[in-house]
Image (cartoon, rainbow, N blue to C red; front, side, top):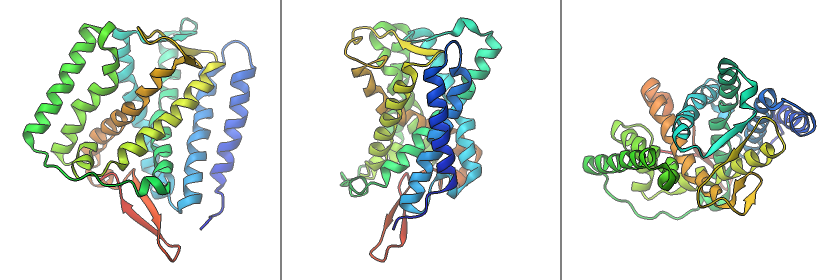
Length: 298
């Protein structure tokens, strides 16, 4: 059943068209104010597309919680900025043009779109037929010992990348997930570990592919923008697609799981009941064309 195209989708397309053009055509500084509306346009366009396919979306299920994605997103990305202060894998051209306070404001505004973009795209991916039919892999028991072991492994990863960043820098995209996700599972928050234990890999597929799609647009729109980011990646700095070395795109897949874990750590503590119903439902359509909502990110 094809539904009407929501107004927010039209607004989103206009925002993308206008600010994509401005970011790539104006000279001097522009991306600090152009990044947010461009990615806001992306977020609400994807949300509208999901609604048109399914009759539901992150925005339509809870506008308050959808706005909460933006609030959690900025401090979440600052964690990776702090780690990058040690690893130095990306730098921002144009940073010297801003005072520290100006940089913090504009950067935080831009960072606020990361989680809404990834989660919205992941939900759109989750609606695809082949994802909904992704086969179960069999369930396994996850106990307290496993939680402790996985978290300890994550802490060891983090220590290694901070002490020897030249060799262990890729662990930035794994260590946080290994630390946080078992804590979520132990506390009863939604977790990827629990889905995997139940044999359901659809959250991993949806999040990973959704973040990879976002990664393509992040890198493409960044390429001719200013200020912009560039990379300094040891051993892998070849075969670029835009500024990113081609192998670097692989980091977007585990990064999506870290975002999911951090989001549910925060929301599981602040709003334990609401967080278990948002985000992450996989809608499907029954033989009568009615929406059947199945819990997905359990």
